[in-house]
Amino acid sequence: MNKTKQTEITNEFGIPCPLEDESDEKYAYRMIEEICDFLKKYAQIAGKKGYVCNLTGGVDSFVTSMLIKKSGLELINLSLPFGINPDIAELEIEKRTIQPDVFRTYDITGPVNESLDLLHNLPSSKVDIGNTKSRIRMTVTYRIAEVYDVLVAGYSNVAELTLGMVTKFGDDAADVKPLAGITKGIIYEMAKIFNAPKSIIDKVSTSGMWDNKSNLEEVTELNHQVCMYLRGEEISNEYEARILKLYNVSKHKRHLPVSTKDTWWEE
Image (tube, rainbow, N blue to C red; front, side, top):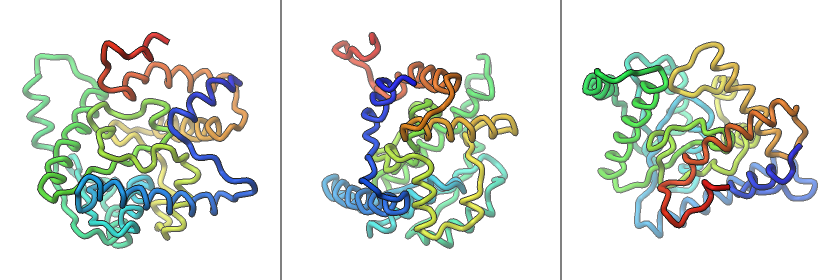
């Protein structure tokens, strides 16, 4: 494996190294304390009351919300479905466990369809529609943040950021990303510490935009492989090449905006 590239990626995301003989559980406890401390300090410096976080029914948004709750700050959770929400059962379970200070649901079907209708003369795809949904959700989220005088907490994890599985100015837009340096395995350890319901722990990872059976399987396996890679474990040359390709072609998503003085894109 390309250890130099592996080190470059782990350094970019600031992935904390486990202490000697530190179990995953102890590592997760330590990360929880460090992240909660960061969330409190950052909100204080920004002069904000807390954070707003979208709930998806998945483990990432659950853990992010619980970190905010544990920090003692105001937590606003949003559900932003496109029409009928297939994850409504998981959301209800999440809400009861998290107990946010405020919970709001807004159906984004109307504004998404209006946006697509506005550009009806342009070609579209499932990816385009998925990105439109993501950007509408973030528009709503920032409006709520403005009204409640809070910051926006994103829930992208390090695997998604490495692979570029985020939408520019959509789900990737946030004031803070508490899980940006945390691998999926440790996120699951955090979820267990926070007594996450089994349905959330067992839920298959999704892109949240254009999911189907093959997409779910692909996302799950890619998440698994990139987490192994970022932990310094051996993976096949085929998967390493795929990860590095996705990492390189998605750099533009992680360096925004680009100025004339930037040189990363020439490397």
